[in-house]
Amino acid sequence: MKKLIFLLASALLFLTGQANAQFTVNGIVTDDSGQPLIGASVMVKGTANGTVTDVDGSFSITMPDSTYTLVINYTGFQSQEVKVKSSEKLQVTMSADMMQLEEVVVTGHGSRNKKADRAAIRIRGNSTLSGQAMSTVPYAPAKPYSENQPPFNTEDYDLIQENRFFEATQNPLSTFSIDVDAASYSNIRRFIQQQGQIPPKDAVRIEEMVNYFDYEYPQPQGEHPFEVITEISECPWQPQHRLVHIGLQGKKIATENLPASNLVFLIDVSGSMQDANKLPLVQASMKLLTDQLREQDRVAIVVYAGAAGLVLPPTSGKDKQKIKEAIDNLEAGGSTAGGAGIMLAYKTARENFVEGGNNRVILATDGDFID
Image (cartoon, rainbow, N blue to C red):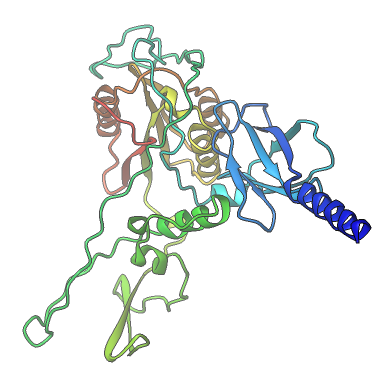
């Protein structure tokens, strides 16, 4: 009997030891250039166990044993799976995903505190910071700042108020917007796939999820520039109600027949834009756009941080190499004073206005904006 009790006790101690056995894995996640990726998702495959990388791209995660696989995700980069074989520190290098770059969703997570006493742009020549009489400005990027504080989350969403029902007999008219936004679908997918969490309710925008998909509507016929498509069906969750589907299809115009474009990019190059899914993502996306520019299209780049500067004067789309070089030379650092940048961007767009053309000022920022 004593022998049996001893064997049972030994087995219990063994099982307890196995249950308590844990395996800690440390590592660092970087991009192709060796820059750390901040806020990358690191998950133990097949479990809800996960963590995110810190300001140095480092992570530490506890696993049941060393037979598991880690799944690493980061916005704009190809997902990676790493089989853990030992307790040695992992070095994970991620490559940009060009497919994801075509539907960029830049959010404010992982932004850093800004150094107000450092300007990212040193302006030389006949120029002023207010955007008045600004000439072409050589761009001198600031050195990246460093700090010991962990990144803080600035990602936030406006409160969505549910629309109340109206009696159609009393309110027969309805209005709706015809602009097409689709970012919510990609953002929700990011929360689920890369962070393993339910998205905030105010990030879920039904109209943007519906607009994400291509419904292959027929092209407009005749002189009208758009076609209206309508459908009506029972509401699956409330059979006494009806759902009305209204689709608009604009006439597709061949690229060669599009009016000339006058595009001015206003880019935030302050310190908080250093993260790989911010300024580098903007740069990669802009280079994709550059490949589609025509000779009659013109693009200019205005940047702002501690000051504003014109880093690329209006340039023809045929000078793709010149445009891409200006894009590659952008670096982040400094504070965020966007007032002068806005003034200079609109001044540049106004001076190069194309009558009947596509005139746009396009702002790229992580949202941490001060005057």
